[in-house]
Amino acid sequence: MRQVSTFIAIAFAAIFLLSFNVTAEEPEFENPDLQLKFNLKGEGDMLSPQTKLPGEAETTKTVMAQYDNFVGFRSNREAVDVGTWTSEPVEFGLSISIKSFDIWWEDTEGSDDSCEWTITIELNGEDVSEDVSGCQHNGDGIAKATHNLATDIELNTGDTLGINLVYEGWDDIKIYYDNVTYDTGLNVAGGHVLFFGATWVSSEVNVEFAEAWPVNWNTNLDGRFVMIMGSDGYMADNKKADVTEGSEYTITLPNGSADVTSTIITWTEVTGVGIQLMMDYTTFDHMAGNGSANGTAKPALVSLMLVKATGLLGDEGGLLGLPGFEIAIAIPVIAFVARRFRN
Image (cartoon, rainbow, N blue to C red):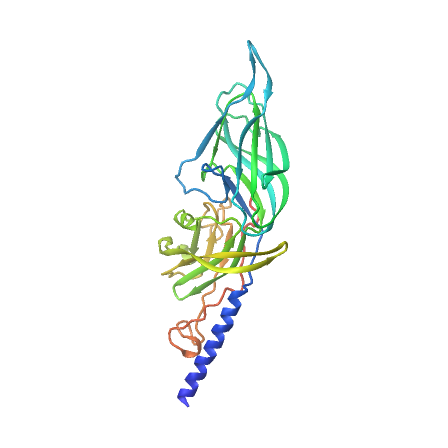
């Protein structure tokens, strides 16, 4: 009878594991609208959500004003092409809304601060919108100018997003970009990230997701752009986290289907309680949304509340009493807190 009971327990566990694996083939995922900054990158004229680490130097570019210069006066101011920055091909189709464009710049001459910017959004190298606006600041020192945009684009798998900048002014200027401080780039809202779920088993936490434009999460771990946090100020050690390639999925989206490969970030030796994942693409106030009373604090873009998985026989028990086995279930509810759209 004891052998039969053991056999039944093992068989039940096998059935559970089989059903779990089937579920993993066709995961349900959260696809929230999030606003990311698509940064102008210094290398390769790329447009990317990837951000440098704090302390890494910015890129600068001097833009020479073009005009006819006569004795005592200038005339016929001309437009000057500043450059074009283009993203990598998108991994899956999605709808995006381009809200605004930020650019850090200064006037290097200081004689005439009137100017005009032409901001052209491109899809696969073709113009889809063009916005013209003034300087937004007087150029006296390095400052950020924000240009409001309202461009909606439907992207299919393999499409690229681009921006072309044209400057027209009387003075030479210098622009600053590709840096945590000088975050020149587009503010783009959309379902850029697909969350397949997260698990917290024993002292290990992992999160699985896919991105329309993948970034380097080893870099983001080094910059603490992503953290496992808990009660009483607990922070897991990012040096005990690994980034691995996950599973291949075929996902169905409103504008079609796409094959994606997920990314998994795994933390080990997690000892805190009240655990949540705080995830961003740049720096954030690690206490915001975690007990901080600072009204000006910048919370993480995404916060996932995690529930620890336990065995059926208690915190350290296994499935049906089988030793060393814990139910590795996906978190049933993924809570997106703070701001889905961040200005």
